[in-house]
Length: 343
Image 1 (cartoon, rainbow, N blue to C red):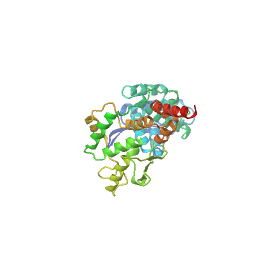
Image 2: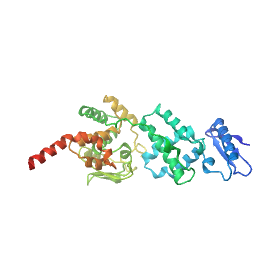
Image 3: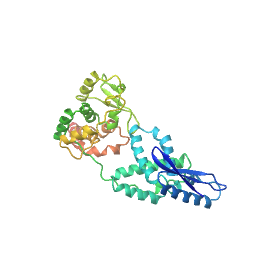
Image 4: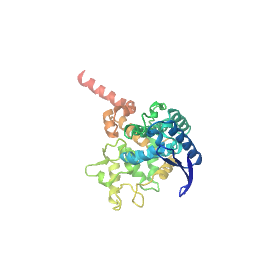
């Protein structure tokens, strides 16, 4: 018979379940609520009694077990930004379905979670939650042999809206830079300027170290990219001048170019960035849109799709295609020049 013990920990009361049956391996799990503990005890005992032969891994392990192992073995292989995002996704799955045995994580359960997530998150974000758990379940199938097949393979992703391509108008750009220049956070202005001048992502900028800044060659190396492929970005004024001035007063107690006061971590921009947007009266704009602004400006001044793909670090041309219409004037100039030369 199953037994449930109360365990008092620093995190509060936890409920430990023990299932002992003759001829079967003893099983135990700990849950945050008695209801989850009781559900696991009843379903596990039934599964052991009804199953002949060795107990399959999908009955032995819970989704919480799979998530814990995925955190330990797989997350460290990913970029810091991806680790951060996937940890948030895994926390949600652990809280919602962690008590279930893997055999009970069915497509129907996952669809219910998908619909629940869609009530408070965008379609793209919901798909990222599904992607994270899908990868953990795929590893459980392929490497750990805890499952025969992933239930996520039968769950359809949500349809995405047209890709966002918000960029700053000339007037918005001037207002935003003016607000950043007068911000109490003295690092906000150079960071925003570097984002506009290189198209770098926020995490790429914040993890930038002085070892990867070459002012003599006028370039920076972004190591911690989303694609996990380092990317070199050329520097031009005024971003180059700002970095040169910043280097003259650089701190020697931290490797980060943009460090917080204690030097142990990169600076936190959330408050100062939102305040600058409010002061500049700019709406419907996020930090990542600075990257779209860089790409849009580059396309409008003649950059080809291949140029943009290299500058942005995109793996495929399809990712850069959203900016193709902005380079139409440049393409017309190319055709006009060719026609004048040969005809």
